[in-house]
Length: 327
Image (cartoon, rainbow, N blue to C red; front, side, top):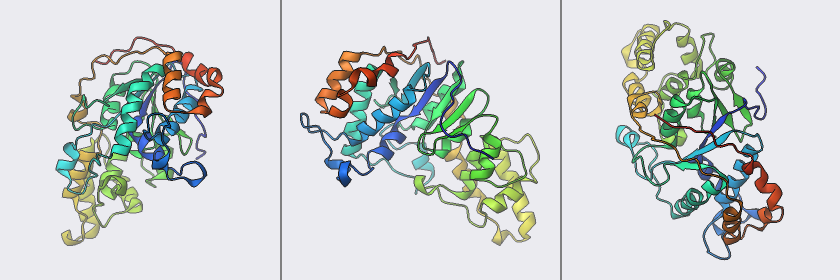
């Protein structure tokens, strides 16, 4: 399979950005000339800025693709249902370094015409991925989920695509089957985005603290997938995989921990009543405000953006602001 390099977005697309994921990755990248990123600060306010710089750069690259709209989503600062389900699940760090930068992004991204959802703990315990899952379920326009996180590949389906800004992989409904086989789950079975949740539930996700269920890796899981009956929902797939595993090993003591797999699935699956029940309301539609954002850059002493500010801001001015209400 040839993986699409760089985005080729459908016309009129709305981009749904995992803002927390952006910040967590970009805030810890090496600073200028190898400087500790936590020492990159505004000379005026003293606040940390390195994650903000990276986020501005990524959003600018995204805006150059001329989407109709960009909406950013943030994690709640509170531990949620996943931490209750799984003792090893990643806990909220409460890092002031990240927290201050997220607060600043929530304050200034509307000046770029980008609404920010979830940064003020409007949805306690929910993560950006949950909010994005709910948003794209209600979207009437073509959607691109923009995230470094493989979890969000499960949202790829009718009218919904995924773009990883780091790998430059653009995954569409037409390519999701081949992409999952190449990158994660080698199998002759047909795969959809939903199968990413099952894959993670079985093989684990170290970055999130989801432990593997033991005795089953991607190759074995791929073989088991070829024996699954069609039309199963994800919880039913776990039960069917349990039966296949027991039949293959002939010994319950050698089987994987499928009880753990069901618990893991509750944490990995983004197509559950928990996401369906989120009420996003009507997402704001901020207009780009060139002078207000210039002041932000001056406060943050970001001279590199200010040197060619008119040219830099232009892609954000081009964003349309269609009406978009989330039921």
